[in-house]
Length: 279
Ligand SMILES: [Zn+2]
Image (cartoon, rainbow, N blue to C red; front, side, top):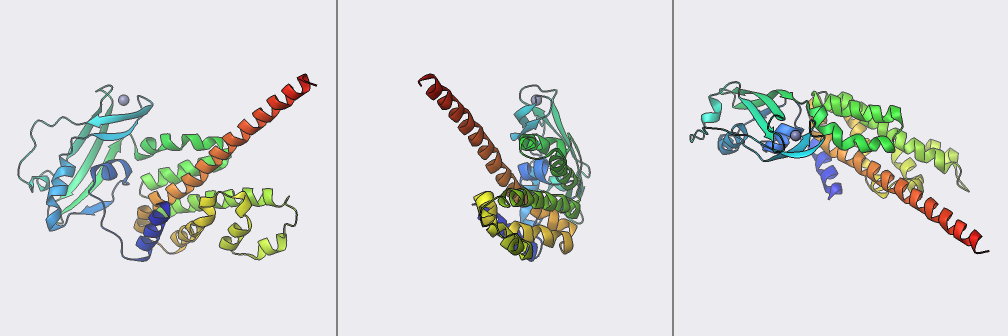
């Protein structure tokens, strides 16, 4: 499935920009500020549903410190399907189901003439909502690299697409370099061949030291490099979620591997202790 996402993302970056999303969860939680959503003539129902959205919105609540479900209580939802165009600065406030004083606030800008919707403000920030899920990666990333991951997310949240790709690419390179350092201890390792290779070839040489997902999806690096050199801010922002998921899967594999290694070490130790006692 993730291969498909990445391929789709690659396809998007190669072709014209796709239509931005009117899906409420996507728009409120994942879309960066200022991204312009154009509403096609036959999308008025979706725009109405977005502006008068009442939840449930499932996301991180910074005040609860965990995921929660948010709802909005609207007294009057207009029946008219084009009513969404009439409020130029809609204010959308959703409340945490654990504690109603925990709120997600969004300020939107609607342009009736251009039929566009933009998210121009939000609190808590998109970075704060997204940061929770990446905290666990601080276990497997060096401090400086983890900081770069949070910077990538923060930049994307503020509409800086190319800059966020620069950080993601550096994280990708550091994961490969870590594997390279480990591989130099392998019997028969050919450093000369490694140095000559392009990134895709290097990853193949390191396949014993890298998660399978990274080896299979080594095209991510190409997408990141293309982003840094050729793609527009908007194209990078659109591709950001898929590329970020790709890097998260690689890091998830590292967390699993670290846990497995820890368990193996503990088990080996206890078995050795048992064996010593039975001697
Ligand atoms: Zn809460």
